Every structure is written in C-alpha cells, then in structure tokens.
Amino acid sequence: MRQLGLLLIAIQMVLIGCSKDQSPAAAQAPENQNQEEVLPADLSKMTAQEVLETKYDAVKLTCSLWSRMKGPIFLSDTPKDTVSIDLLKEPDFPKTIDLRAKSQQHTVEIQITLEKLAIVSSLRSVHDDGAIYSLKNTPELTGKYEGAFFTEYPMGHVEGTISSDLQLNENILSKVVRRSSGNTDETNPVVDYAECVLETVPKAAYVMDWQQTNVGSESTCAWEQPGGSKVCLVQK
Image (cartoon, rainbow, N blue to C red):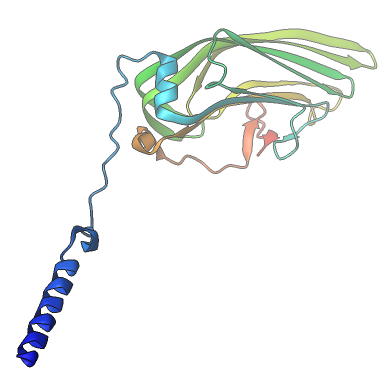
C-alpha cells in the first residue's frame, strides 16, 4: 500500500508539470508575424500645407548668392549670402528673400518674392544639364526675382537692374541669377550667380514619388559665358 501511494503521488506531479508547460504564460508568440504596411494617404483633397505635413519629414528652401569682381566663381567657396526657410514651420505666403553681396567695387542685391506654393499631381522636368525628373504630388513654388547691381570703375561706374519670373521644384537645383558684365579684362568679367533648391525629406510611403530618370552631364562648369566663348564663369 505504501508503494502504491508513492506511485500515485509521482503520477500526480508529472500531470501538474505538463499542465504548467501548456499554460498561456508559457506559450510562445508565433514567428514571422506580418507587420502592418503603411500606405500613402489620399492627398487629392488636402491643402498644400496639409500635403507637406503628411508627406514629408522636412521641407526647406535655401537660396544662395555668389559674386566676384573678376570671375570665375567657385561654388565650393562660401556664398556671399544665403537664406533658408523651413516651410513646415513657416507656411504663410507670400514670402520675400533678400540676398546681398559685395566684391571689391561691385555690389549686387537680389530680392526673391515667393507668391504661391502649389501641389502638382504629376510633373516631368528636363533640367538644363540633360537630367530628367519624374515627380508625383510634388510641391512647386512660383514667384519672381528682381535685382540691382552697381560696379565702380576708374573711368566711371555701371549700374542696372534685372528681373524674371521664378519656378522652383522639389530637389531640383534652380539657377536663379546668372549675370556677367565685362570690364577692362574681358576674360575676367564681373560675375553674379544665385541658386535656390527646395529640399525635401519624404516619409517612407512617398519615396517613389520623386525619381530621376536620366543623370545628365557631369560637367564641372555650372555656367559658361554666353556667346560660345566656352569660358566657364561658374565652376562646381
């Protein structure tokens, strides 16, 4: 009888152990669980600012100005003036950007007026270096720029104004101002150059909305002197 009692106790302990192994707390989570996919939102009924806030982690416009009394300009040099605007934090339009540069006896002032931000559903853009861009639901800035310049020479001075319409697209460099004027040394004219870029950082669901389908040329010259002289006035 004593042996039978010990045997029953042993069987009972085994059953208790099996019960613990099958308890919910001991159950393991299934492997390879599918993570929920983040899908793009419907942007068609949103305002331009709502699209920016939904689609991007960062949207920044940067405009820079270089100027040199005797060219060429090297873009590796620090710009004479630069302005950046965070469009997620500063959504109001119109906006004005003022750039000013002085190089020896030459002064140039550029005022960029950004009148409107719009979202373009589809855009194909061919850049002047041959690069081709395909964009969807992309921000576009439109406006104009005006500029004034003054150069002092030993025999007098030269002054004037420039102006043009302006269009800025997502992550595509825009050469806003390209101006040169001769002096006593025609191979080294006065050169003014300004560029703007609307830089964006898209969220993961929207990365494929911006594509560059053709790389374009890899020239080290950003701007050649007009007239076929092949003199590089702005070097990358």
